[in-house]
Image (tube, rainbow, N blue to C red; front, side):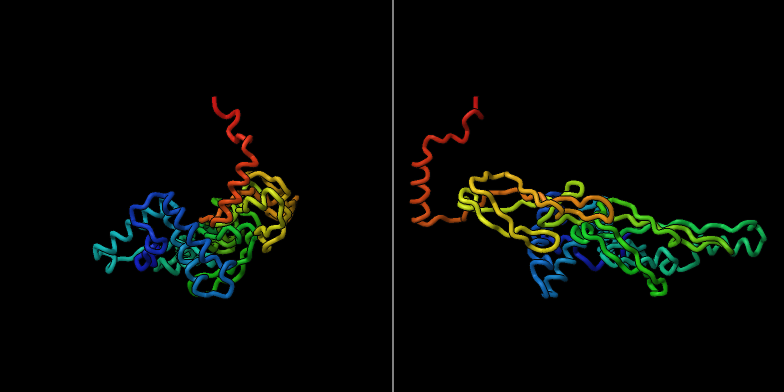
Amino acid sequence: MSSPEWFDRDFYADLGVSPGAPADEIKKAYRRLARRYHPDANPGDEGAEARFKAVSEAYTVLSDPGKRAEYDEARRFAASGAARGGSVGTATGGSFFDLGDLFGSGRGGMGMADAQALFDSLFGTGTAPRRGADLEAELTLDFRTAARGTTLPLTDDSGTRGGQVRIPAGVTDGQRIRLRGQGEPGGPHGVPGDLYLRIHVTPDPVFDRDGDDLLVSLPVSVPELVFGATVAVPTLDGSRNVRVPADSKPGRTLRLRGHGIRREHGRPGDLLVTLRAALPERHDRRAREALRAYADATRDFDPRAGSTS
């Protein structure tokens, strides 16, 4: 079922797309907005942080076909007026997740384990300690938090369920994490079940990933490619100066060892920086004259030699 908060949110408006937008348009809109409002690009700006959270939540729902279908159905349900007299279940999401429905506070009654324990106590059917039921929940993390790892509070609606859950560095989208003893309570003298967290990771506007290696596409100017330059490269720990060798070609990849995913055990991944030629939007007279001189000096160079029949 859909989350009640969905009735009050227009995820399509958050991303600036129409309700009928295809998946690739939604992804492009998210990447553009996430790059603009990312906290690393707007330090101390609470408005940008709130906007980044909003577009991330919107993308989490609209990028998942199942969740998007549920959301669209919830919007139609609300528009029909039927939602005013009904009730819906809760789906978890965001960096701080709510397990209230899982532990009974959102169901208006006792959990399965409690009902079975009551039945056993009344009719004497319980002959051995019974283990509690396993539970499942979903947790959405942004790419960088998933790459670094984090520790989050584990609470329910009433705030009575304390403790923390540690998310290891390098978790992947769709991965399941098992939390022993965090499921439904067991029967008399029985042990509780386990809680399984299904991880969802939202894309990052800067980084991609290949195993434990991080991938970055770095725009550089033509003079920087030809003459070489020292440029700033984004990493998980902030920017780092890297030397671009002279006579580099677009598409060349530089490797920064140890700057990828750092797991607790094993060798850390690397950061692979692919150089991408970037040109100014406009060239003034001096730039055009310099380009003409360059074209004359390299007249014998054919970049398509051997590529055509």
